Length: 406
Image (cartoon, rainbow, N blue to C red; front, side, top):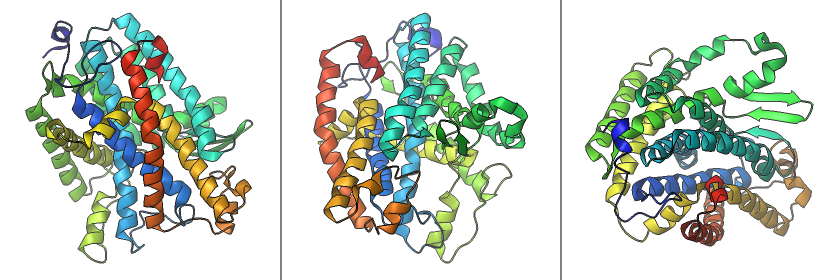
């Protein structure tokens, strides 16, 4: 279906809820988004509760702990899924008839709003102290601002830009940040991962925005290929999954230059060798990482397009309230860590500025085994679900403009 034709055929999927614009949602997409929210909560709960969260790399190939490796590795699906689906959702809005000018204004204002949230409520919630933490919400916000200008171009042109960024962004490492003089902090936020002291405090860039913008543009550009007026084009989604994973297998198998900064190598045993192969670079996202994670995302999307049952209910709820749930989970997880810590004798002050200065929780011996992390994860989800369910109902009943920003 061409971009022009989509304005005459709003995208629908039987059985879905309604968006604010009145279009019918595609349940498989909401369920996928909900799943990665659940997995993302696990990752952040591990940060707050695991005994070695600040002292050891959970994906170290010599740790001897496959469960810890997989607990961290599976969460690599989260960020690219959020970013890819953000781009895809923008195309769905356009395909359902949103005027170009209205879409540009929405993308610009929502992108700015996401950036504000990242550097206020979200960053403080993670740290319980002031700092500037450029994570996935920052990257999505910046990418939306870029797409506000690009969405008027043909979809395939936007797709080409996204692919070019994903393939060529390692070349950004050849540019010295000092080249930009007083704009060096801005360049670091856009292209360089790492910490940067600033007059206003510490700036930690976990998600350089340019690299992640490529994934959002990829989602926007591929949306028309993957979805039509009946919902998912299953054959095309499977073709995309096969193509992405095949390219990953070839490039990773040959350790092609520029494919991933960490070539795989034989380890002590086939399991850890397999872990070496799938241990691809997320910070920033290498071409190998994008192909593997998005390829797996396509397979999960196909599965959710066929699955029915009680489990979909909570996933759909989380997937239809993604930003609201994201904001809440940070404060709930960190707050629960404080409550449990105080109960076992850890001074509450140890949990303030916990990310920027973890020395106090380390000295206090804070943290639990992986089983404790999973129990805390379940507790956070149990607290989150009724709140997200309530907000899902608010969004279903009301059409206030501000709901589009949560």
